[in-house]
Amino acid sequence: MAEQIQTLEELHQLELNLNTLAPKLAPNCASVTGTQAPKVLEQLYAGEGSSALLMSCSKLSQAMCPTCGGPMGERSFWDFEWEVELAKRRMKPSSSCLICEKCAEIRDLLGLIKRLCFAKDLQRTGSEQSALLRHFLSVNGHDAANSHYLQDAVSLAYAIFTLRKELKLVPSRGPPLQELIGKQEVSSRASNVSGKKRLLQPPSRNPKDRRCKQA
Image (cartoon, rainbow, N blue to C red; front, side):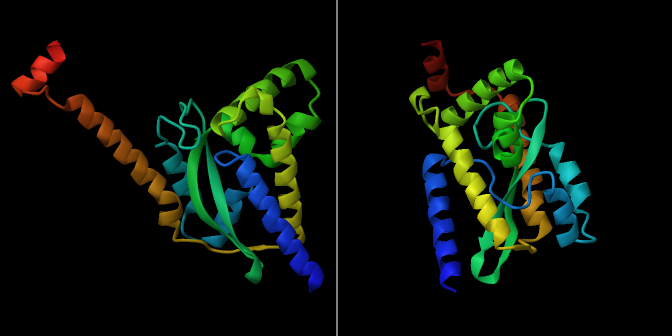
């Protein structure tokens, strides 16, 4: 029991340290990886068409990445947050969104470790690592002097990932599927409608507005 309490305290402290180091963009510590998430959701929400919903919503991704605020680009990736209930030894999906490729590469903990430690093409990997490092530092508000923060974040995230796996957390259902995934569709449509309204909005007929524009 004492060892269990110590593990939970250690896990909590690691999570606090990671959040301080990377408050906006950090490697995902969930024991369910990004590539595994769709299959796990299909099991948790059996018969509810999660795969079809993921596919349809992915086609409606917004122009800007909600994590970094940069352009989404040609490819977008699903990112899931998992709420951990240590007392019940379970984890459940709490939210999701589509993010850009750069953010997705940093969120992919195991893939990031491979890029940083086991890459074969050193020249190509060096430029990719530099791009990832700049993105990580920029999104989290750090400057180049803190370049070691990315490696520190990866180390913390992997320690959390390992402890969570040792706890054998069982995936369980989170909010209703439409709430978990479908709100991405609503948000994207609202953004598109808002953009169209701005484009279709007629010029102001107020003389004061015209004088301001002429000035």
